[in-house]
View 1 (cartoon, rainbow, N blue to C red):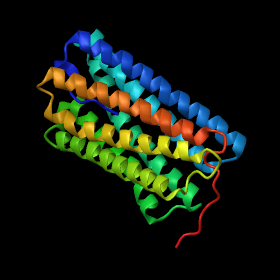
View 2: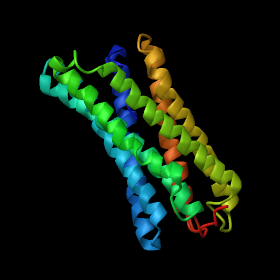
View 3: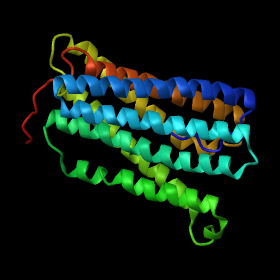
View 4: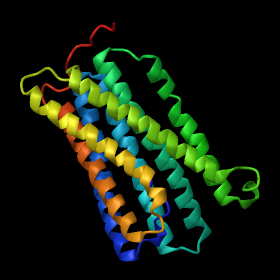
Length: 257
């Protein structure tokens, strides 16, 4: 997920964040690839959807990290600035898509179909993309700044991402508490992993909201960004490994009431 306005953080600390970010992004992509392979072997549609989500957020956040690196390497080049702006918009969009797939996974596994809320959430990645890329376009072409409330577009896109994130995290946590995702031997341990993964992911989403309030405090920005990265990576591993483990994600769909 995006980290807004990192440039007040000293270069030495930014390098640490870049290193952590690449490890996190590689982890999410790895979980996505593994989940897709397991889903194919099990013919599991829900797990395939979630695996795609992991791939999307991993790729989006990797592009965002590379955008920051580009600005560090060539801060005066318009192309570097353009790449960072576009990669930021892409990261916000694909993070929203990831959280949407998490909610869809819960619905497909628990009920075997999508409900009204799922169909509404499916529209959020597209809406987020429109807002985020409107911001990027206005930032790159100053002539549009007078026509497009570009800061409001960026804020709105992040709010949409956060909203989907909370809905998905609490949907997963609710499904864990009801026991509708895992029913195999040893499911109790996996349920615990899923619960912790849900909580850590929700905390990471919360840190996204805190970012704008600490842009003028470099140390706080570094600490919050570090915690966000670690929580996202940990939650991705906990959720992914729980659902891919033998016997995971196999409970038959439950009838809706």
